[in-house]
Length: 206
Length: 248
Image (tube, rainbow over all chains, first blue to last red; front, side, top):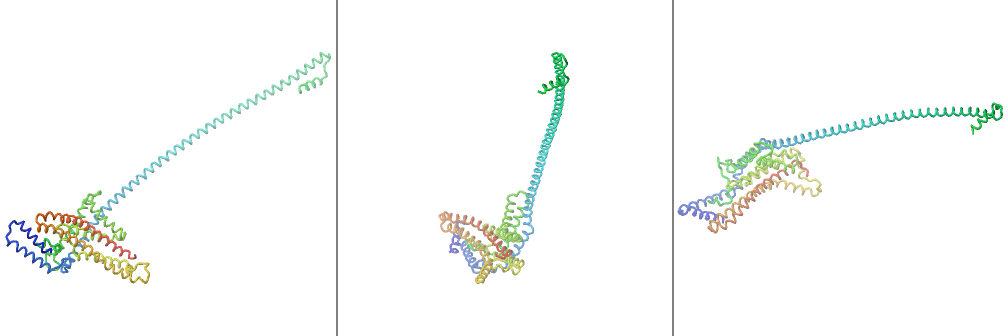
């Protein structure tokens, strides 16, 4: 069906193209097409299954596919691989550099913080030291003052006690003298030596 | 004239230089173009070697990493020794498929002998590397562990058949997809010509429908071209994984 319609359709087309073709021009074309189709069908029914072409196709396929394999494996693919590896290395290198810089930054921050902490600790230490020294000095001062005051107090108390004792001693003598004088005036004769003293002592002891 | 409308004609192989069985044919020329485009693309795209890739270099790197990831996911790190082979296969199939989509061009991968040769290259690599690496242990590939003894012969038979059918399925899948896609394109495009020829102006108007189909199928064929290259690549990786780790 195809072959029948095909040439006739083309024949009509050819006529339209040429405008007014001579009968002699179209007829040989048709017969020529017919013989070609006939001859082709007779020689090779279906080109892909025509075993006459197999050897040639295999031969040239071996040559060209072999060439393709060699060019790919030796030239083209290593080039692409180089590009890809170069990029991977570059990215890796950049990442490593970034990590290194980050580590450096971290280190700097750590050392800064350490310095800060040290300074703070030193400050605390000095403050504590000064505080301690000051409070120690204050304590010493107070203790010295207290002891001085205590000494003065003791001295004063002794002085008071002495004064009191001497005053009391004087009172007895005065009392004995007065009592003796009173007894002499009243009795007209001096009092017996020990009696007046005994009486004064007894009344002082009360 | 018949050639213009014959959907099969695009697959014929004609000698360009020389004669006989090993003549340099249109197929050979397109193979050469495939190699030139694959290598040229990678070389040109990586010419400037910039740290921040441009569009082309990005594309080249994407293709590299795409294949590398495919191998890594299916065959693991050990599969990377096959990277040049897998990448060459991927690029060859992909570029051959894409070049075949250019109108009036020839599709290298639409010939079963080419896809079969590529599939046999994969299977041969699997077998040779498997025996070199593991010796007779490579045959464990056919003996799954944990299968009861009485059904083991059956399982081994199935495994052997499945292994032997791999090159066939691998090659026929690619070949048939390319062949069918190109025939479909040609048939639908041929409808436009036939309709206009048979019905004149009305035919040209109706011909818009097959034209739309042709455009849609062309888009689909671009997807198929990439998808088949990817399928070929990932199956290659899976088969290579069997050679690297024969135990199931």
